[in-house]
Image 1 (cartoon, rainbow, N blue to C red):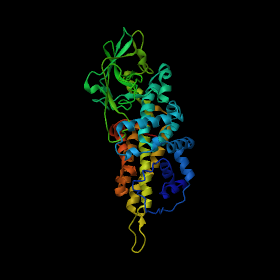
Image 2 (image 1 turned 180 degrees about the vertical axis):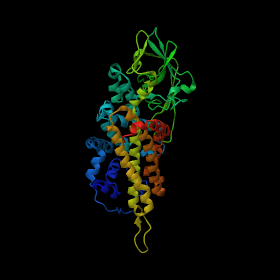
Image 3 (image 1 turned 45 degrees about the vertical axis):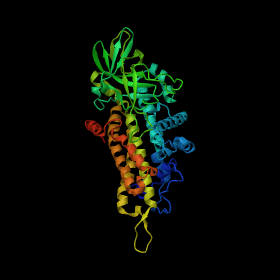
Image 4 (image 1 turned 120 degrees about the vertical axis):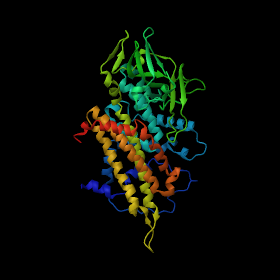
Length: 476
């Protein structure tokens, strides 16, 4: 076994991870009981090469991460009183999340083009935000990966020049309208339609049934001005399958309505409170014969000409798959979000286990519970999983072909999210009753990790999809 790996396995206090987390972890109000009161730290031995381990995990982006850590430490928007503060409303949480997101966007550490050209830099940035506030990182997943990604990857220059700068600085907030109330994984069953009106050179976007409403998108209920709507293109009575269209859903800001009012024909619904991620304004959309210009079709792969003819560079049976394959970065972001939460939880669990003392030989002091085999067996394998998953994400980024990136990211998101959820639950159990308190943060992280089980694709279905690509993995 090589020396760095020996150091990693022997050093169970995971000083690097602990430093990362405590750099952004909010110390709660003085009125709360400190779970470490009167408990003396007794770490196990070990002499790790912290600089080497840091370089393994941080890569080339330590300066970017440190910049964000300073931002988190110096701005109250990244504290977390809403975890325990009485009367903290859903609306306040959403506003706080938006303010924090705009603060980060103003730092200009990454650009939307980094999703395509520097995915390693983009994911390092996204992971660092996830240590501070998972609602903020998910807000960026919606704004940058999904809304911005559709414009960047599915649009052409006319869309880039119109939208990308506003998406980048969060002045043009938007949503990703794929999932419907009646259809999620079965995208071929989507019901929303976009029918061409050739005389007026417009598309008419319509929700023909109650189940065809777009359901769950973030940036819908409160903040969003636009939505990329995936709808069936109907041209001269023929269904050409699912395509993407930019639909304005709110007016510009009005007096008394800082985010505007619903556009004519657009009905906006608020999903309300969820078990986590209440900083995200998830909602629903119904369209009643909403008209948009022909240019609002995202036409990188397919387009409708001025004369009303349909043209596509991709065979009909591969069209939707080609559109979705470019969004592998979105699945990686959800996976990285889950990993950041698991790293945080395992770090807290290990730190607690080094400080909490129970049992010991007669007449001798009690020992830190990390010395007990049962505690080690629940925490240390998950520490190893955190490192393994971290390296796996880096491997996916280094993959050369888009087909492999799509397959790997699908499988990694599914398996990684399950592992991270399990690791966080075990960290909570290893902390006993203290792990049940909101101020310990671990149960909050566990609730947030539920999004990884179905968000960006149901994990079981993703595993089935990945298994059908087994020939792609023959060299691994």
